[in-house]
Amino acid sequence: MSAGIKVGEQYQIPVILPDGHTHILGAQDLFKAPNKAKKLNARVETLDFLTLLSDIAKSSKDILILKELIAETNVANDILIPSLTKFATNVGTSPEALKKLLKRADDNGLFHKIGTGHYMLNPFVLLSKGLTYGGGDKQCDAQIRWRAYTVIMTESDKQALVKLSEFLNREICLPANNFTIDVANKYIAKGKLTDPQLEAIRKYYG
Image (cartoon, rainbow, N blue to C red; front, side):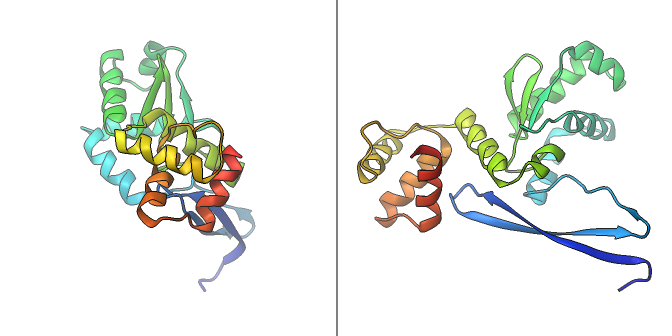
């Protein structure tokens, strides 16, 4: 180990992946004596983030603006921009250029536009600092909400949801979101649920 570097506590962060499985992210708290270094935001899928960045950013300035946008992300992984004009001025760009950058981020799946000046950062790609420290439950909630915003449903998805709901003895069909649809299709394909899938479904939907 290098002189002056100490290894601190181990952290285990549970995250539900798109396939419904729970994945434990391991991390170490590294610090140089005597001052502890700031922790970075948790990267869930670093390669996905870099791929999206290459599609969204047209210049190094775009990357810096994205950095400022991501820095605004709250514990719910939402980005709130009360005034696009003011934000554009603060980061040294025009409102038109900012809107185009936000649209590219939305089109490529890094952000999802909820309303004017209100976006959600994809929690399957990058977690805010607040969400990182919020723990597994808040992270799972954010991922389920992202799936609900971005769901695309087919007729076979509907039938799979009905079959899964019947299997769970639910009087009302499960809500349609990417999480429930993904689990339902896996149930149809395998004829059963894994323990993590069943636990996650019961945790959020009873």
